[in-house]
Image (cartoon, rainbow, N blue to C red; front, side):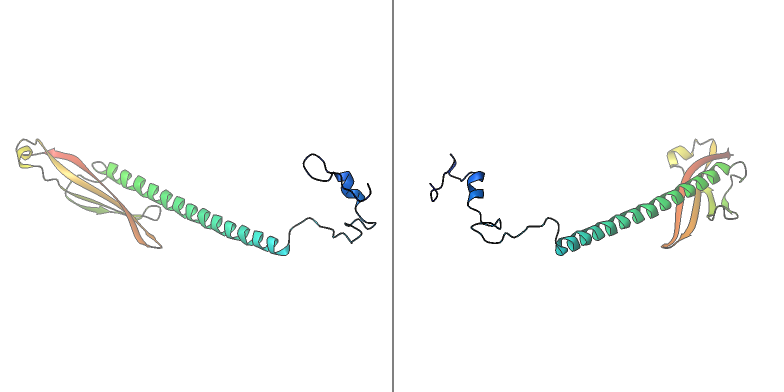
Amino acid sequence: MSGSRIMNGSGRQSGRQRRQHQGPQGGPQGGPQKARQGGFSLLEVLVAFAVLALSLGLLLQIFSKAMSTAAIGETYSRAVALAEAKLDAVGTDVPLEEGVHSGDPEAGMDWIIHIEPYQLPDWLAESAPLQPYQVTAVASWPSARGTRRVMLRTVRLGEPLL
C-alpha cells in the first residue's frame, strides 16, 4: 500500500494522502517549497495611484466648473433683480415718457432704461384710450468673456390719448 494512491470519489487524492507524499522540507517529494507572499506588486500600486490621480483631477475639474457656473448664475440673478427694480421704478422715480434714463452703477452693474411709444396694431390703435409705452431695462456687467447683460421688456400704459 505504500506505493499505491487512494482516491476519493471525485478522483482526487485526499488532503491527508497528499501530506504523506511531501518530503521533509514541506515541498512535494522533498523539494523546497516556495512561499507565496500576499500583497500587491509595485506595478499594481503604480497603476492604482495613476487611476486615483486621474479620478481626482477629473473631480476637481467638475467641481471647479460647477462653482463657476453657480457664480455666473448668482450674478445673472442679481442682474435680473436690478432690471426688475428699474422697471418697477418707471412711473414713480422715473417718469413714463419717451427717452433714455441711466444712473450710477449698482452692485457693480450698469443699468439703462429705454422708454418709447408702443405701436399698436391699426385695428386697436383707433380705440386705445391710453398711450402704451414699451419699457426696456438693461443691466450689464463686465466679465472675463466680455460684457454680459440682461434685458427685460414690458408695456406700460401712460397718459390718456387726446
